[in-house]
Length: 318
Length: 227
Image (cartoon, rainbow over all chains, first blue to last red; front, side, top):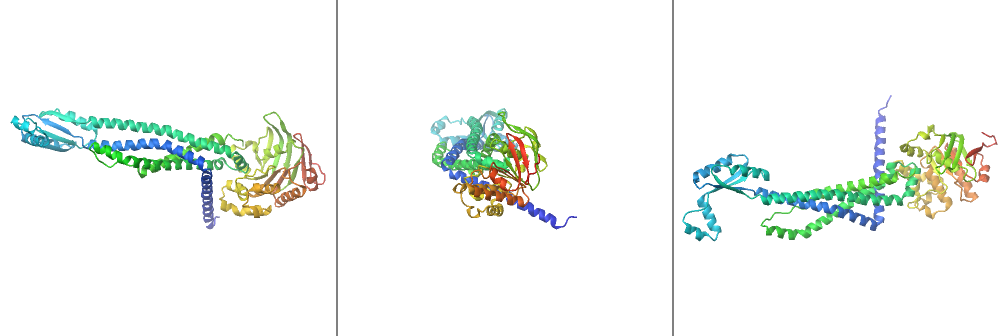
Protein backbone atom coordinates (compact mmCIF):
# COMPACT_ATOMS: atom_id res chain seq x y z
CA UNK A 1 0.00 0.00 0.00
CA UNK A 2 1.24 3.41 -0.90
CA UNK A 3 1.80 5.91 1.86
CA UNK A 4 0.75 9.48 1.15
CA UNK A 5 4.35 10.69 1.38
CA UNK A 6 5.47 8.62 -1.57
CA UNK A 7 4.22 10.82 -4.39
CA UNK A 8 5.63 13.86 -2.65
CA UNK A 9 9.03 12.23 -2.40
CA UNK A 10 8.81 11.19 -6.03
CA UNK A 11 8.02 14.69 -7.15
CA UNK A 12 10.82 16.10 -5.05
CA UNK A 13 13.16 13.65 -6.70
CA UNK A 14 11.86 14.57 -10.15
CA UNK A 15 12.26 18.21 -9.23
CA UNK A 16 15.87 17.76 -8.21
CA UNK A 17 16.54 15.76 -11.38
CA UNK A 18 15.11 18.58 -13.45
CA UNK A 19 17.20 21.03 -11.47
CA UNK A 20 20.29 18.94 -12.15
CA UNK A 21 19.39 18.80 -15.85
CA UNK A 22 19.06 22.58 -16.07
CA UNK A 23 22.23 23.09 -14.01
CA UNK A 24 24.25 20.74 -16.18
CA UNK A 25 23.01 22.55 -19.30
CA UNK A 26 23.97 25.88 -17.78
CA UNK A 27 27.40 24.46 -16.96
CA UNK A 28 27.86 23.44 -20.59
CA UNK A 29 26.56 26.79 -21.84
CA UNK A 30 29.01 28.58 -19.56
CA UNK A 31 31.82 26.29 -20.68
CA UNK A 32 31.05 26.82 -24.39
CA UNK A 33 30.90 30.60 -23.91
CA UNK A 34 34.20 30.73 -22.10
CA UNK A 35 35.82 28.61 -24.80
CA UNK A 36 34.64 31.11 -27.43
CA UNK A 37 35.87 34.02 -25.32
CA UNK A 38 39.21 32.34 -24.73
CA UNK A 39 39.96 32.24 -28.44
CA UNK A 40 38.74 35.75 -29.27
CA UNK A 41 40.28 36.23 -32.71
CA UNK A 42 38.90 33.02 -34.19
CA UNK A 43 35.50 33.65 -32.59
CA UNK A 44 35.28 37.26 -33.77
CA UNK A 45 36.18 36.25 -37.31
CA UNK A 46 33.56 33.50 -37.39
CA UNK A 47 30.90 35.74 -35.88
CA UNK A 48 31.73 38.52 -38.33
CA UNK A 49 31.49 36.24 -41.36
CA UNK A 50 28.14 34.91 -40.11
CA UNK A 51 26.87 38.46 -39.60
CA UNK A 52 27.83 39.43 -43.15
CA UNK A 53 26.02 36.39 -44.49
CA UNK A 54 22.92 37.44 -42.53
CA UNK A 55 23.06 41.15 -43.40
CA UNK A 56 22.52 40.83 -47.13
CA UNK A 57 19.15 39.05 -47.02
CA UNK A 58 18.11 41.25 -44.11
CA UNK A 59 18.85 44.42 -46.09
CA UNK A 60 16.91 43.11 -49.09
CA UNK A 61 14.02 42.39 -46.77
CA UNK A 62 14.28 45.95 -45.45
CA UNK A 63 14.23 47.41 -48.97
CA UNK A 64 11.30 45.15 -49.89
CA UNK A 65 9.33 46.27 -46.85
CA UNK A 66 9.85 49.93 -47.65
CA UNK A 67 8.85 49.37 -51.28
CA UNK A 68 5.63 47.83 -50.02
CA UNK A 69 5.11 50.95 -47.99
CA UNK A 70 5.66 53.14 -51.05
CA UNK A 71 3.22 50.95 -52.96
CA UNK A 72 0.57 51.37 -50.33
CA UNK A 73 1.02 55.12 -50.47
CA UNK A 74 0.57 55.18 -54.21
CA UNK A 75 -2.24 52.67 -54.24
CA UNK A 76 -4.17 54.80 -51.78
CA UNK A 77 -3.86 57.68 -54.17
CA UNK A 78 -5.01 55.60 -57.14
CA UNK A 79 -7.96 57.30 -58.73
CA UNK A 80 -10.00 57.18 -61.91
CA UNK A 81 -11.05 60.34 -63.72
CA UNK A 82 -14.17 60.05 -65.88
CA UNK A 83 -14.50 62.81 -68.49
CA UNK A 84 -18.16 63.27 -69.29
CA UNK A 85 -19.82 63.88 -72.67
CA UNK A 86 -20.33 67.50 -73.56
CA UNK A 87 -24.09 66.91 -73.66
CA UNK A 88 -24.30 66.01 -69.97
CA UNK A 89 -25.65 68.83 -67.82
CA UNK A 90 -24.39 69.63 -64.35
CA UNK A 91 -27.52 68.13 -62.78
CA UNK A 92 -27.08 64.90 -64.73
CA UNK A 93 -23.40 64.85 -63.88
CA UNK A 94 -24.13 65.23 -60.18
CA UNK A 95 -26.72 62.46 -60.43
CA UNK A 96 -24.19 60.12 -62.05
CA UNK A 97 -21.68 61.01 -59.38
CA UNK A 98 -24.24 60.19 -56.68
CA UNK A 99 -25.18 56.91 -58.35
CA UNK A 100 -21.55 55.85 -58.44
CA UNK A 101 -21.15 56.60 -54.75
CA UNK A 102 -23.90 54.04 -54.04
CA UNK A 103 -21.52 51.29 -55.02
CA UNK A 104 -19.58 49.54 -52.24
CA UNK A 105 -16.49 49.42 -54.41
CA UNK A 106 -16.29 53.20 -54.54
CA UNK A 107 -15.10 55.18 -51.58
CA UNK A 108 -15.54 58.69 -52.78
CA UNK A 109 -16.62 60.67 -55.86
CA UNK A 110 -16.03 64.30 -56.69
CA UNK A 111 -18.00 66.02 -59.45
CA UNK A 112 -16.06 68.74 -61.21
CA UNK A 113 -18.27 70.90 -63.37
CA UNK A 114 -17.10 72.57 -66.58
CA UNK A 115 -17.05 75.93 -64.81
CA UNK A 116 -15.00 74.60 -61.87
CA UNK A 117 -12.58 72.88 -64.21
CA UNK A 118 -12.04 76.14 -66.02
CA UNK A 119 -11.55 78.06 -62.81
CA UNK A 120 -8.99 75.54 -61.48
CA UNK A 121 -7.23 75.41 -64.80
CA UNK A 122 -7.03 79.18 -65.04
CA UNK A 123 -5.66 79.47 -61.56
CA UNK A 124 -2.90 76.93 -62.19
CA UNK A 125 -2.01 77.74 -65.75
CA UNK A 126 -0.34 80.37 -67.84
CA UNK A 127 -2.91 79.85 -70.55
CA UNK A 128 -5.71 81.63 -68.71
CA UNK A 129 -5.49 84.58 -71.06
CA UNK A 130 -5.75 82.34 -74.09
CA UNK A 131 -8.73 80.54 -72.57
CA UNK A 132 -10.46 83.79 -71.92
CA UNK A 133 -10.09 84.70 -75.58
CA UNK A 134 -11.75 81.44 -76.62
CA UNK A 135 -15.00 82.57 -75.01
CA UNK A 136 -16.51 79.13 -74.98
CA UNK A 137 -15.33 76.79 -72.20
CA UNK A 138 -13.49 73.89 -73.90
CA UNK A 139 -12.97 71.81 -70.74
CA UNK A 140 -15.22 68.83 -70.08
CA UNK A 141 -16.97 68.12 -66.81
CA UNK A 142 -15.46 65.20 -64.93
CA UNK A 143 -15.98 62.87 -62.00
CA UNK A 144 -13.01 61.81 -59.87
CA UNK A 145 -13.63 58.31 -58.51
CA UNK A 146 -11.62 56.98 -55.56
CA UNK A 147 -12.02 53.21 -55.24
CA UNK A 148 -12.41 51.64 -51.84
CA UNK A 149 -10.07 48.76 -52.72
CA UNK A 150 -6.40 49.67 -52.88
CA UNK A 151 -5.55 46.78 -55.17
CA UNK A 152 -4.25 47.53 -58.62
CA UNK A 153 -6.31 44.75 -60.25
CA UNK A 154 -9.55 46.00 -58.74
CA UNK A 155 -8.85 49.56 -59.81
CA UNK A 156 -8.08 48.45 -63.34
CA UNK A 157 -11.26 46.34 -63.51
CA UNK A 158 -13.28 49.30 -62.33
CA UNK A 159 -11.63 51.52 -64.91
CA UNK A 160 -12.52 49.04 -67.67
CA UNK A 161 -16.13 49.05 -66.51
CA UNK A 162 -16.63 52.79 -65.91
CA UNK A 163 -15.21 53.88 -69.26
CA UNK A 164 -18.06 51.91 -70.93
CA UNK A 165 -20.71 54.07 -69.23
CA UNK A 166 -22.98 55.90 -71.71
CA UNK A 167 -22.25 59.39 -70.49
CA UNK A 168 -18.51 58.92 -70.22
CA UNK A 169 -16.49 60.23 -73.12
CA UNK A 170 -13.17 58.94 -71.90
CA UNK A 171 -11.55 57.79 -68.69
CA UNK A 172 -8.04 57.92 -67.30
CA UNK A 173 -6.03 56.13 -64.68
CA UNK A 174 -2.39 56.28 -63.82
CA UNK A 175 -1.41 52.79 -62.80
CA UNK A 176 1.83 52.17 -64.70
CA UNK A 177 3.86 53.66 -61.90
CA UNK A 178 2.28 51.46 -59.30
CA UNK A 179 2.59 48.38 -61.47
CA UNK A 180 6.26 49.02 -61.99
CA UNK A 181 6.76 49.41 -58.29
CA UNK A 182 4.89 46.19 -57.64
CA UNK A 183 7.11 44.39 -60.14
CA UNK A 184 10.28 45.85 -58.63
CA UNK A 185 9.12 44.89 -55.18
CA UNK A 186 8.45 41.34 -56.35
CA UNK A 187 11.97 41.11 -57.79
CA UNK A 188 13.53 42.49 -54.63
CA UNK A 189 11.56 40.10 -52.45
CA UNK A 190 12.32 37.11 -54.65
CA UNK A 191 16.01 38.05 -54.62
CA UNK A 192 15.75 38.36 -50.86
CA UNK A 193 14.44 34.83 -50.55
CA UNK A 194 17.12 33.41 -52.83
CA UNK A 195 19.83 35.22 -50.87
CA UNK A 196 18.33 34.01 -47.62
CA UNK A 197 18.52 30.44 -48.89
CA UNK A 198 22.07 30.66 -50.28
CA UNK A 199 23.53 32.64 -47.40
CA UNK A 200 21.64 30.51 -44.88
CA UNK A 201 23.47 27.53 -46.36
CA UNK A 202 26.68 29.54 -46.09
CA UNK A 203 26.05 30.04 -42.36
CA UNK A 204 25.48 26.29 -41.97
CA UNK A 205 28.83 25.61 -43.63
CA UNK A 206 30.70 28.25 -41.66
CA UNK A 207 29.42 26.94 -38.33
CA UNK A 208 29.81 23.33 -39.47
CA UNK A 209 33.44 23.88 -40.34
CA UNK A 210 34.18 25.67 -37.08
CA UNK A 211 32.61 22.79 -35.14
CA UNK A 212 34.55 20.24 -37.19
CA UNK A 213 37.82 21.89 -36.14
CA UNK A 214 36.62 22.07 -32.54
CA UNK A 215 35.81 18.34 -32.55
CA UNK A 216 39.24 17.65 -34.04
CA UNK A 217 40.87 19.65 -31.23
CA UNK A 218 38.90 17.90 -28.52
CA UNK A 219 39.15 14.34 -29.81
CA UNK A 220 41.04 13.22 -26.74
CA UNK A 221 38.44 14.70 -24.43
CA UNK A 222 35.63 13.05 -26.41
CA UNK A 223 37.38 9.70 -26.13
CA UNK A 224 37.73 10.05 -22.35
CA UNK A 225 34.08 11.08 -22.00
CA UNK A 226 33.05 8.03 -24.00
CA UNK A 227 35.13 5.80 -21.74
CA UNK A 228 33.48 7.10 -18.58
CA UNK A 229 30.02 6.50 -20.03
CA UNK A 230 29.15 9.74 -21.82
CA UNK A 231 26.15 9.44 -24.11
CA UNK A 232 26.23 10.79 -27.66
CA UNK A 233 23.95 13.64 -26.70
CA UNK A 234 26.17 14.57 -23.75
CA UNK A 235 29.19 14.63 -26.05
CA UNK A 236 27.34 16.65 -28.71
CA UNK A 237 25.91 19.19 -26.24
CA UNK A 238 28.86 21.59 -25.93
CA UNK A 239 29.26 21.69 -29.70
CA UNK A 240 25.57 22.42 -30.20
CA UNK A 241 25.79 25.26 -27.69
CA UNK A 242 28.85 26.61 -29.47
CA UNK A 243 26.93 26.61 -32.77
CA UNK A 244 23.94 28.28 -31.15
CA UNK A 245 26.12 30.97 -29.57
CA UNK A 246 27.96 31.64 -32.83
CA UNK A 247 24.68 31.97 -34.75
CA UNK A 248 23.09 34.27 -32.18
CA UNK A 249 26.21 36.43 -31.88
CA UNK A 250 26.43 36.70 -35.67
CA UNK A 251 22.79 37.80 -35.85
CA UNK A 252 23.26 40.37 -33.08
CA UNK A 253 26.27 41.87 -34.85
CA UNK A 254 24.22 41.88 -38.08
CA UNK A 255 21.42 43.80 -36.31
CA UNK A 256 23.94 46.36 -35.10
CA UNK A 257 25.41 46.78 -38.56
CA UNK A 258 21.94 47.14 -40.09
CA UNK A 259 21.16 49.91 -37.61
CA UNK A 260 24.38 51.67 -38.62
CA UNK A 261 23.57 51.30 -42.32
CA UNK A 262 20.08 52.74 -41.73
CA UNK A 263 21.59 55.72 -39.94
CA UNK A 264 24.02 56.27 -42.78
CA UNK A 265 21.31 56.16 -45.41
CA UNK A 266 18.54 58.00 -43.60
CA UNK A 267 19.37 61.56 -44.65
CA UNK A 268 20.14 60.78 -48.28
CA UNK A 269 16.95 58.71 -48.62
CA UNK A 270 14.84 61.46 -47.11
CA UNK A 271 16.39 63.77 -49.65
CA UNK A 272 15.56 61.38 -52.51
CA UNK A 273 11.98 60.99 -51.38
CA UNK A 274 11.45 64.71 -51.05
CA UNK A 275 12.61 65.07 -54.67
CA UNK A 276 9.74 62.77 -55.63
CA UNK A 277 7.40 65.01 -53.73
CA UNK A 278 6.53 62.31 -51.21
CA UNK A 279 7.49 62.39 -47.63
CA UNK A 280 6.61 59.52 -45.41
CA UNK A 281 8.56 57.99 -42.56
CA UNK A 282 10.76 55.11 -43.72
CA UNK A 283 10.22 51.79 -42.02
CA UNK A 284 13.30 50.74 -40.02
CA UNK A 285 14.39 47.14 -39.50
CA UNK A 286 12.57 47.15 -36.17
CA UNK A 287 12.58 45.01 -33.04
CA UNK A 288 10.45 42.21 -34.46
CA UNK A 289 12.62 41.69 -37.53
CA UNK A 290 15.76 41.88 -35.40
CA UNK A 291 14.32 39.26 -33.08
CA UNK A 292 13.48 37.12 -36.11
CA UNK A 293 17.03 37.49 -37.39
CA UNK A 294 18.45 36.42 -34.01
CA UNK A 295 16.17 33.37 -33.94
CA UNK A 296 17.12 32.53 -37.51
CA UNK A 297 20.83 32.95 -36.70
CA UNK A 298 20.50 30.75 -33.62
CA UNK A 299 18.64 28.03 -35.53
CA UNK A 300 21.14 28.04 -38.38
CA UNK A 301 24.06 27.87 -35.95
CA UNK A 302 22.49 25.01 -34.03
CA UNK A 303 21.60 23.05 -37.17
CA UNK A 304 25.07 23.62 -38.65
CA UNK A 305 26.63 22.31 -35.45
CA UNK A 306 24.24 19.34 -35.35
CA UNK A 307 25.04 18.29 -38.92
CA UNK A 308 28.75 18.62 -38.29
CA UNK A 309 28.54 16.75 -34.99
CA UNK A 310 26.54 13.90 -36.50
CA UNK A 311 29.03 13.69 -39.33
CA UNK A 312 32.29 13.86 -37.38
CA UNK A 313 31.49 12.67 -33.88
CA UNK A 314 29.75 9.43 -34.54
CA UNK A 315 32.46 8.43 -36.97
CA UNK A 316 34.80 8.01 -34.01
CA UNK A 317 35.32 4.58 -32.44
CA UNK A 318 33.14 3.33 -29.59
CA UNK B 1 30.01 -10.35 -12.33
CA UNK B 2 32.26 -10.81 -15.34
CA UNK B 3 32.11 -13.97 -17.40
CA UNK B 4 34.11 -14.88 -20.51
CA UNK B 5 32.74 -17.84 -22.44
CA UNK B 6 35.19 -19.18 -25.02
CA UNK B 7 36.06 -15.68 -26.21
CA UNK B 8 38.33 -14.99 -29.17
CA UNK B 9 39.33 -11.62 -30.53
CA UNK B 10 40.95 -11.16 -33.90
CA UNK B 11 41.77 -7.60 -34.97
CA UNK B 12 41.20 -6.34 -38.48
CA UNK B 13 44.90 -6.79 -39.27
CA UNK B 14 44.59 -10.53 -38.60
CA UNK B 15 46.31 -10.47 -35.22
CA UNK B 16 44.74 -12.93 -32.78
CA UNK B 17 44.77 -11.04 -29.50
CA UNK B 18 42.73 -13.58 -27.54
CA UNK B 19 41.74 -17.14 -28.31
CA UNK B 20 39.24 -19.35 -26.50
CA UNK B 21 39.41 -17.53 -23.18
CA UNK B 22 36.95 -18.62 -20.48
CA UNK B 23 36.86 -17.47 -16.87
CA UNK B 24 34.51 -15.94 -14.36
CA UNK B 25 35.08 -13.18 -11.86
CA UNK B 26 32.52 -13.42 -9.06
CA UNK B 27 30.78 -10.50 -7.46
CA UNK B 28 33.11 -8.93 -4.91
CA UNK B 29 36.14 -10.90 -6.06
CA UNK B 30 39.57 -9.42 -6.71
CA UNK B 31 41.95 -10.82 -9.32
CA UNK B 32 45.15 -9.95 -11.14
CA UNK B 33 45.50 -10.42 -14.84
CA UNK B 34 49.07 -11.03 -15.81
CA UNK B 35 51.27 -12.01 -18.71
CA UNK B 36 53.94 -10.48 -20.93
CA UNK B 37 53.11 -7.38 -22.89
CA UNK B 38 51.15 -8.38 -25.96
CA UNK B 39 49.62 -11.36 -24.18
CA UNK B 40 46.14 -9.86 -24.55
CA UNK B 41 45.57 -8.19 -21.16
CA UNK B 42 44.51 -4.86 -22.57
CA UNK B 43 42.29 -6.47 -25.16
CA UNK B 44 40.54 -8.45 -22.43
CA UNK B 45 39.83 -5.24 -20.48
CA UNK B 46 38.67 -3.48 -23.65
CA UNK B 47 36.19 -6.28 -24.26
CA UNK B 48 34.71 -5.78 -20.78
CA UNK B 49 34.05 -2.08 -21.35
CA UNK B 50 32.96 -2.79 -24.91
CA UNK B 51 35.70 -0.71 -26.52
CA UNK B 52 36.17 -3.81 -28.62
CA UNK B 53 33.78 -6.58 -29.61
CA UNK B 54 34.50 -10.28 -29.28
CA UNK B 55 35.05 -12.01 -32.63
CA UNK B 56 33.81 -15.26 -31.18
CA UNK B 57 32.34 -16.38 -27.88
CA UNK B 58 30.46 -14.32 -25.36
CA UNK B 59 31.31 -11.76 -22.71
CA UNK B 60 28.81 -11.28 -19.90
CA UNK B 61 28.94 -8.39 -17.44
CA UNK B 62 26.41 -8.33 -14.64
CA UNK B 63 24.45 -10.99 -16.52
CA UNK B 64 24.25 -8.96 -19.74
CA UNK B 65 25.61 -10.34 -22.99
CA UNK B 66 27.81 -7.59 -24.43
CA UNK B 67 27.45 -8.95 -27.96
CA UNK B 68 23.82 -7.88 -27.81
CA UNK B 69 24.60 -4.41 -26.49
CA UNK B 70 23.41 -1.66 -28.85
CA UNK B 71 25.44 1.47 -29.51
CA UNK B 72 23.15 3.62 -27.40
CA UNK B 73 23.32 1.16 -24.48
CA UNK B 74 27.11 1.37 -24.24
CA UNK B 75 27.22 4.56 -22.10
CA UNK B 76 24.97 3.05 -19.45
CA UNK B 77 27.08 -0.12 -19.43
CA UNK B 78 30.29 1.86 -18.98
CA UNK B 79 28.87 3.95 -16.18
CA UNK B 80 28.71 0.78 -14.06
CA UNK B 81 32.44 0.12 -14.52
CA UNK B 82 35.32 2.21 -13.21
CA UNK B 83 38.46 2.03 -15.31
CA UNK B 84 41.99 3.09 -14.44
CA UNK B 85 44.16 3.50 -17.53
CA UNK B 86 47.87 3.00 -17.81
CA UNK B 87 48.29 6.40 -19.47
CA UNK B 88 45.82 7.97 -16.99
CA UNK B 89 43.63 9.51 -19.75
CA UNK B 90 43.33 12.74 -17.80
CA UNK B 91 42.24 16.04 -19.32
CA UNK B 92 44.85 18.73 -18.88
CA UNK B 93 42.57 21.63 -19.76
CA UNK B 94 40.77 21.42 -16.42
CA UNK B 95 41.39 21.03 -12.72
CA UNK B 96 41.82 17.83 -10.73
CA UNK B 97 38.31 18.37 -9.37
CA UNK B 98 36.75 18.60 -12.84
CA UNK B 99 38.62 15.51 -14.00
CA UNK B 100 37.26 13.46 -11.15
CA UNK B 101 33.77 14.97 -11.54
CA UNK B 102 33.56 13.92 -15.20
CA UNK B 103 31.75 10.57 -14.73
CA UNK B 104 29.17 12.32 -12.53
CA UNK B 105 28.71 15.19 -14.96
CA UNK B 106 28.21 12.63 -17.71
CA UNK B 107 25.56 11.01 -15.51
CA UNK B 108 23.60 14.26 -15.32
CA UNK B 109 24.88 15.71 -12.06
CA UNK B 110 25.62 19.40 -11.93
CA UNK B 111 29.04 20.53 -10.79
CA UNK B 112 27.63 21.48 -7.43
CA UNK B 113 25.76 18.24 -6.85
CA UNK B 114 28.87 16.29 -7.77
CA UNK B 115 31.15 18.10 -5.36
CA UNK B 116 30.49 16.00 -2.25
CA UNK B 117 31.23 12.73 -3.99
CA UNK B 118 34.24 14.19 -5.81
CA UNK B 119 35.75 15.38 -2.54
CA UNK B 120 35.09 12.00 -0.93
CA UNK B 121 36.89 10.24 -3.80
CA UNK B 122 39.80 12.69 -3.70
CA UNK B 123 40.04 12.29 0.05
CA UNK B 124 40.22 8.51 -0.39
CA UNK B 125 43.23 8.79 -2.70
CA UNK B 126 44.82 11.53 -0.56
CA UNK B 127 44.56 14.39 -3.06
CA UNK B 128 41.86 16.52 -1.47
CA UNK B 129 44.24 19.43 -1.01
CA UNK B 130 45.06 19.48 -4.72
CA UNK B 131 41.57 19.63 -6.20
CA UNK B 132 42.07 23.05 -7.74
CA UNK B 133 45.40 22.26 -9.41
CA UNK B 134 45.91 21.23 -12.98
CA UNK B 135 46.83 17.53 -13.25
CA UNK B 136 49.86 18.38 -15.39
CA UNK B 137 51.53 19.97 -12.36
CA UNK B 138 51.30 16.72 -10.38
CA UNK B 139 53.64 13.72 -10.31
CA UNK B 140 53.01 10.45 -12.15
CA UNK B 141 51.86 8.72 -8.98
CA UNK B 142 49.47 11.56 -8.17
CA UNK B 143 48.09 11.54 -11.70
CA UNK B 144 47.45 7.82 -11.37
CA UNK B 145 45.56 8.47 -8.16
CA UNK B 146 43.42 11.11 -9.90
CA UNK B 147 42.59 8.38 -12.42
CA UNK B 148 41.61 6.06 -9.57
CA UNK B 149 39.46 8.73 -7.92
CA UNK B 150 37.71 9.27 -11.25
CA UNK B 151 37.17 5.53 -11.66
CA UNK B 152 35.46 5.14 -8.28
CA UNK B 153 33.60 8.46 -7.95
CA UNK B 154 30.49 6.96 -9.53
CA UNK B 155 30.60 4.04 -7.05
CA UNK B 156 30.82 1.36 -9.74
CA UNK B 157 30.35 -2.32 -9.00
CA UNK B 158 33.39 -3.22 -11.05
CA UNK B 159 36.83 -1.65 -11.05
CA UNK B 160 39.27 -2.40 -13.87
CA UNK B 161 42.86 -1.24 -14.03
CA UNK B 162 45.35 -1.55 -16.86
CA UNK B 163 48.95 -1.53 -15.59
CA UNK B 164 48.14 0.98 -12.85
CA UNK B 165 51.65 0.69 -11.42
CA UNK B 166 53.36 0.84 -14.80
CA UNK B 167 55.73 3.73 -14.22
CA UNK B 168 55.74 3.89 -10.44
CA UNK B 169 58.39 2.91 -7.93
CA UNK B 170 57.71 -0.14 -5.71
CA UNK B 171 56.56 1.88 -2.71
CA UNK B 172 54.03 3.89 -4.71
CA UNK B 173 52.94 0.72 -6.51
CA UNK B 174 52.19 -0.98 -3.20
CA UNK B 175 50.17 2.04 -2.09
CA UNK B 176 48.13 2.01 -5.29
CA UNK B 177 47.40 -1.71 -5.00
CA UNK B 178 46.44 -1.18 -1.38
CA UNK B 179 43.81 1.29 -2.60
CA UNK B 180 42.35 -1.36 -4.90
CA UNK B 181 42.22 -3.79 -2.02
CA UNK B 182 40.34 -1.19 0.01
CA UNK B 183 37.71 -0.85 -2.67
CA UNK B 184 37.47 -4.64 -2.88
CA UNK B 185 36.90 -4.71 0.86
CA UNK B 186 33.71 -2.69 0.44
CA UNK B 187 32.34 -5.11 -2.16
CA UNK B 188 33.67 -3.85 -5.48
CA UNK B 189 34.78 -6.52 -7.96
CA UNK B 190 38.34 -5.68 -9.00
CA UNK B 191 40.38 -6.85 -11.98
CA UNK B 192 43.91 -5.48 -12.29
CA UNK B 193 46.11 -6.13 -15.30
CA UNK B 194 49.78 -6.03 -14.39
CA UNK B 195 53.02 -7.62 -15.54
CA UNK B 196 54.70 -6.88 -12.21
CA UNK B 197 54.72 -10.49 -10.99
CA UNK B 198 56.94 -9.85 -7.99
CA UNK B 199 54.54 -7.28 -6.64
CA UNK B 200 51.29 -9.17 -7.16
CA UNK B 201 52.65 -12.46 -5.89
CA UNK B 202 53.05 -10.88 -2.46
CA UNK B 203 49.37 -9.95 -2.35
CA UNK B 204 47.15 -12.88 -1.74
CA UNK B 205 44.68 -12.75 -4.61
CA UNK B 206 43.65 -14.81 -7.56
CA UNK B 207 46.05 -14.56 -10.56
CA UNK B 208 44.93 -15.16 -14.13
CA UNK B 209 47.79 -15.58 -16.58
CA UNK B 210 47.59 -14.97 -20.31
CA UNK B 211 50.17 -16.02 -22.87
CA UNK B 212 49.83 -15.19 -26.55
CA UNK B 213 46.12 -14.69 -26.16
CA UNK B 214 45.45 -17.91 -24.28
CA UNK B 215 44.55 -18.35 -20.66
CA UNK B 216 47.38 -20.55 -19.39
CA UNK B 217 47.03 -20.33 -15.66
CA UNK B 218 44.38 -19.38 -13.12
CA UNK B 219 45.39 -19.71 -9.47
CA UNK B 220 43.72 -18.52 -6.34
CA UNK B 221 45.78 -17.80 -3.26
CA UNK B 222 47.08 -21.05 -1.81
CA UNK B 223 48.05 -22.55 -5.14
CA UNK B 224 44.77 -24.23 -6.02
CA UNK B 225 44.49 -24.13 -9.79
CA UNK B 226 41.15 -23.45 -11.37
CA UNK B 227 41.98 -24.75 -14.81
